[in-house]
Amino acid sequence: MTADELARSYFSRAAKRMLALRVLMDAAAYPDVVREAQEIVELALKGMLRAIGVDPPKWHDVGTVLIEHRDKLPSAVAAEADALAAISLRLRRDREAAFYGDIDLIPEHVFDRDAAERALAGAERVLRAVEPFGAA
Image 1 (tube, rainbow, N blue to C red):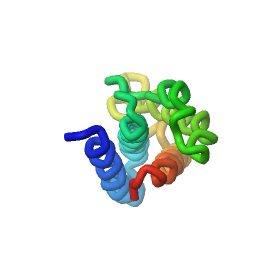
Image 2 (image 1 turned 180 degrees about the horizontal axis):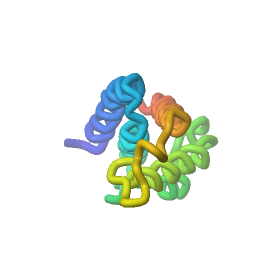
Image 3 (image 1 turned 30 degrees about the horizontal axis):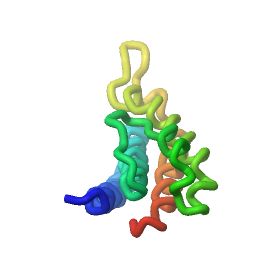
Image 4 (image 1 turned 120 degrees about the vertical axis):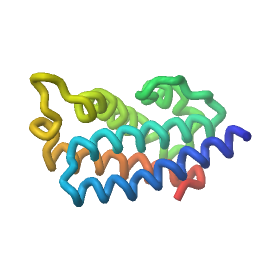
């Protein structure tokens, strides 16, 4: 498998997860929307990095790596690199809490419709950003 094939695989998987994200949103599963949105963003950004010849690190938030390599990105995407990195950072911070919670943090009490809509909008923005790489 080549880096381009792997990048396309990441983009495809991210797009398919977006379908699931909308189902979760309709079911008012707001913490799960936040968690899945993070995974969509992670896959899309890692696919973008692979598409420009950068082997992404094995951690969840690769926004800083994207910014570091913005000079390799198409100009329209490079202009959005800071915003895409901010989306990645915010969702990475929320991912564990949204999935696991804690004794004093019940995910359904913390991640409401507004949080889910913000996560959904972030995932949609990142997916639009990968379109120049052939992602649909």
